[in-house]
Image (cartoon, rainbow, N blue to C red):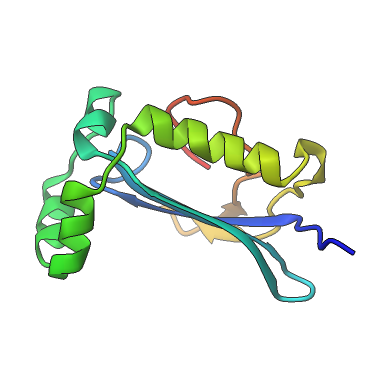
Length: 136
């Protein structure tokens, strides 16, 4: 019996604050919250210049934070990036290959907004096409 995964966690690294921070990497894992089982994973680094080309911004404080990271982390960002359009298309394709759109559940967690109020997090995690992702 094949395990079906209905939950998807996405982690991004950016060179600035949402919603316009230039995307530097995207990682994701399908999982089953009930059984605590991990499923397929996705990880890609984005070439920062392509992210800026497509509208991403670089925040000076984020840039300074990245300068303080390990040599390995800085090297990965500097040399291993792919064009953002390819990364987002690959991510979209990976989701489509891993799950049926109708199988992905709405997020149930909440996050705290800048004003301190609780609000629902993203309601869908599936992406369609290689378009700039402003918020997930």
